[in-house]
Amino acid sequence: MDLSLDQLATAVGISKRMLVHYFGDRENLEQAAMTLLEERLRAQFAPETFPDGVSSQTVVTALWERSTAPSAKGVLLLVMDLSRRAWSGSTRAKGFYLEQQRQWVRLLMKFLPDQTAVEEVLQLFQGALLAYLITGDPEPGKRSLARILPSNSTTQGPTSQKKTRARP
Image (cartoon, rainbow, N blue to C red):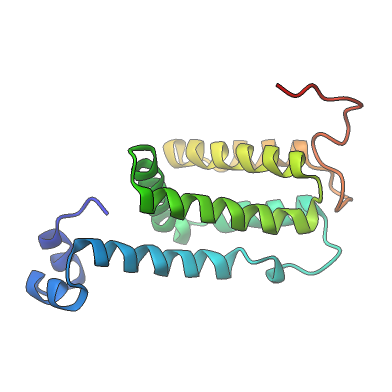
């Protein structure tokens, strides 16, 4: 997303003029890229891609494997770029981010029906992905996620093991 139109045209093997002709302007091009990315992510992380009755740990481990596969790095970098744009005030990027959060919560709630637990798993997952992008090592994130999820339950999560929980 930070490429100039000249750089992007060169990377895809067409002229800048053709890019502008096809998309109209940079905003339309970025919107088309976000729409395509959203469609890909929605298909890849849809709850229906997992069988009913599978444990939350199995689902999160599979999501981790999909997210840290070498073929997913470009998508991760694009998502991080959109996150950076959201932090910088881009309304479109923030909308993209919020929609992705909503999709992840929808997915995780099917296998971990505890809203607080889902939020905690999602926060840990996102932090672990950032560490993975920086270090290139997926193992610490995989271990951390495995530690907070029971391996044999679809309903228990990190907070269900606690008797009470103080809310700020």
